[in-house]
Image: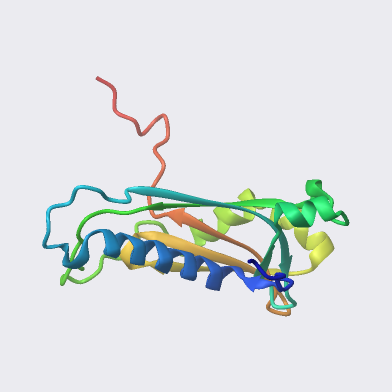
Length: 177
């Protein structure tokens, strides 16, 4: 017999994603213990989809509160106000060994990344209502990507995004033939 469920409190999104990823990893390992046996079945793709209420604290950390169909039928929750959190996991056999060579410097310049983010997010307009915003790019060598955080003067995260470290070709730079 199933007992009464306790109300679910807010869950830190990063912690939830880490736990979900660990669960899928453990399920994968259970299918192929030791990776010495022949593989008849692998979890190559898995998806997890949840209806959640999304919040953020004063520091900008995102939290979620899962909502069940029972919660919706009891009332008091407007389904239109919920977000769908869809997580896709893709697994591969084996890992790529990290390179022992010195990591290459990023292709794109820091100022170019900042300019692109300011334009994409229309920060000039946003600063009129939010005040001065700081664009803080960090290059992640292992992934060859830029992680960009936009914060207000109090350190509250306004936006985060990831950009590849690739230079877009212009029409004049493309080769023909």
